[in-house]
Length: 412
Ligand SMILES: [Zn+2]
Image (cartoon, rainbow, N blue to C red; front, top):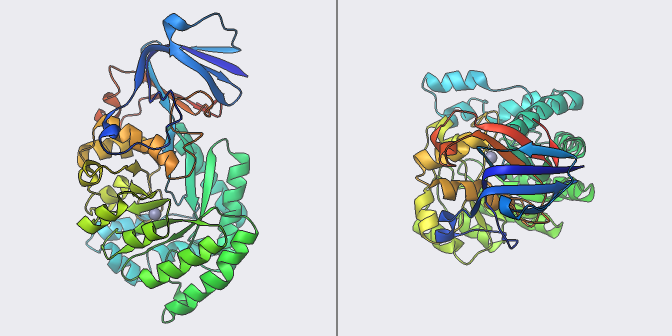
């Protein structure tokens, strides 16, 4: 299958060389070509350039993108989309005055999702999760990381991970899998957190790694959940089985999780609503990508990640949804990009870099995704007719996507 997209008003995020990460000042630059074409063969971008350079080319399908922009599909590096049911009642409880922490103390929160997931069949979980993934793809997401963490027993975590494996096999989206066994302390271990961490380290990690069901290891490093010592034990165990750390840190408290993750060469540190100067300092000269999840801040009414401090310190930043039933029931990266501009004061160029190339880096796939580059996968968004790419974040809540192409196939 070959596709020619011609008369593109502006082709965004064009990288002549295979750039894998964009940092600091460079995030303000979004390279583009006006009046451009792009060619796809099978699942790969094979050529692009200004229309004046287009020579005769026989494509099986020709798309005329007059008045429209083309950009790489979003790369969503942090989600929890495999879950059962929803938590809309807790949403109402919060409106009526309870905090996220109070709801968790009442047995709601993550443990609520754990109970529902344990009692839902694998087939049913798959169907529910596939629906979420498909709606994300319709909204322009082509690559996505998915975490476990609503099982919290060996059996239920394996069930979640098998669902992710099946999504990987049956969906066109590129999926990366993270074992988040230490998401919350299950009820049975209420007074024995160490016993649960022992279980994660001695049983879950080895079984999951041997079954090749995950690539990354995650921990919810937060007060009341898992402390630095627990987090370090789990990262070390994961690494010994080849799982690379990607860690939830600094959502509510900054107490050294960032430095610990950097020490263990985490691929990313995610959330970062609370950032100390030390946290920012330690990220410099590291390989760890800071990841902001602004939809979560929006939904919980908690502070936003200080993107300006992070980027102005010369660091990179990625944006992701955190799609999950409790704190972010939305997988819409367009909203994330808008919110990053509106609330985190990122420029449209910074937000698009953060949601494409840097998102891909935070999943370990930026050699193949996240920019318009010859040889990269043809995961593309074609917008509706718009004046400039600034309209994407500006018209928040609007769907400005006309067509989505994933691995060279038009999906909507
Ligand atoms: Zn999360």
